[in-house]
Image (cartoon, rainbow, N blue to C red; front, side, top):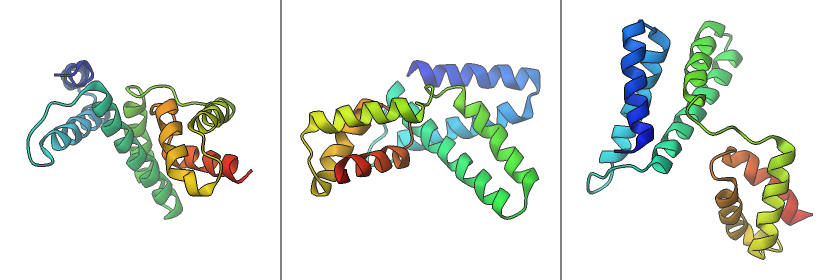
Length: 151
């Protein structure tokens, strides 16, 4: 079992003992998503820490998008709930890169990949995502890659 998954389970137990409803619900949701990912496909597998991080990143993105949608729909109480769940998930994710840091890393990765224009967007994105390693959302990375390739 991955150490991150073990950490989630032990934190869930602690949250249940403390009767922390938000943390308990958020961690249960995260562990359910991890378990679902483990049994998806043709055979069951044990997720590595990197795989668990990807699942948590995906869940955090869902919470961020839901909070934005609720704010747009005039439902601040539901947005606040999503943001509280997001805060719990972000404690397990690596620190997100700032815009300046991200731009430097992506520019170096694109240059190293040898991509010169938009037709090589896939090659550039593969190199950039490997360099960023989950410390920024894909949409932010793609925007910078497009600017670098166009520019």
